[in-house]
Length: 311
Image (tube, rainbow, N blue to C red; front, side):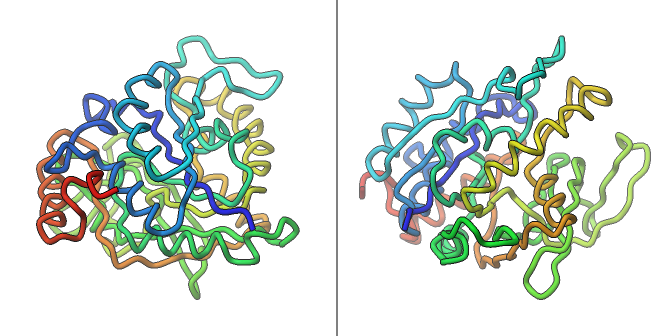
């Protein structure tokens, strides 16, 4: 059995946050959010990690993250670059925005040779979430290459637990039946309100209410190795449309690809539940709350302090 791989998407520059939020200290001893994810993933059983980063960040990233990760995992790096496109496509003039989370996974395609989990670098997912996704990835259906439809999984969180007081967020809103995903819709501007939540699709001209108890994806996915081929096959279709309609900002989101597979009945997505609280930093103003939560967990000895001093 090939042991699962953890893929960490860390190529985003955190434009709304105002800096490299992936490397901003949060814990009492300078720990960053990613440190806690690596710690929890290691406890769950992950032994290999692939960091997807920008090439120009390699030296700083290796110094601040990689050196610590190497204490507990085999570490590899993949570079997400705008020019990494299928034959026949080129980067539109003026494009600076990365191609999205689906493209981030494709950046690591040569490093993925086993079932894999995908996470954002700047989200705190919780220990139970990693344990659940690891157990899914070592199950026989995921390990076999010929199982149809594709066995996928995601860890879902309650929307109200993922919102910020300081601005809008993007979330994949999920419809779930009997423990499996039926549909996922990417909402790119969701805001917290006094009574719950709302979203807009026209830049704020109009808003529609949302159920704050909705289940949402925070990009914690579990995939068999064959998902890489599915993403690569679908990327040109996305590019053809985006080059016409939104060449400077269109993104190839993982939820879009998963939803297409569901529509085509080529995949089943098991929705895993987690009792853990999700924490994330989208804006600078979010940092005090997240930092306080992580420090409290250290004080309660849920995590050692310093975190890496126990490794």
